[in-house]
Length: 351
Image: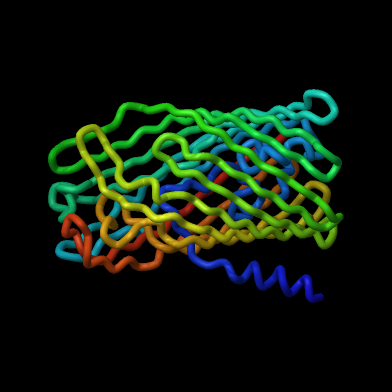
């Protein structure tokens, strides 16, 4: 009973979500638990979430593919002139594949997006922030390869190579600017340890790649029975290396700060072919008041996720609600109140 209370309290402790231009749509199965899945790694998306779990998967030869559709709604600015964000959506594919290479070694490959941002303002000719940005985008896409090795039946380690392409763009009164598509490489590593029948522990790290920050995740999963899984993950993202973005000849100050994210997830198996999922993510904003503005307005945000798995299909949905940012020290003098909501819908098929 005491253990149940501890896990319940950890689950409720999660609140608010933000984290720069981090994107949560790498897998429908994990989106349903708000990406609290590093200590489970039980499907091909372990290539991304924890390569240390690849060799411990029950089904080592597997493939999955899908897409995540997301966007912002109800975005607005209230200051020296009102501004409304356009309701926009964006679809991003993801795919993973794993196969055994002997009894203890498993190889995997994946393609997904980890960092994305969209901001577009209505009435760009009259928007008060038109000399800073009327439309802005951050896009990235990763192709990764990974190897997982089973050191023991309850201990797996893994590492991977990541090839990332990215592009930035901004439109303002002076015209439209975009960076050349840039490419860079990095690595990831992870460990998954199951010392007890009902508990597992994970630690993963992804290094900084190009302009994007490093990220470290620690996770704990508890299985009180074969039908229930609870997991708590903590992410640390090194946003402080992102001082500014350069888009062609335009320099955009951001001065981002490191963030810590708390994620909690729950899975309940109803039958051998059906599960339902719930999740919650908790993050503080990476963006200080001085750089919150028309190009980007990050905020503390509460994000709820839910999902359903039926057979080979996973479907998930998340909804985010920003806290109101009341800004009086913006570097460009665009002061006022910023707020918006966000949503994601993901579908993944796994064979």
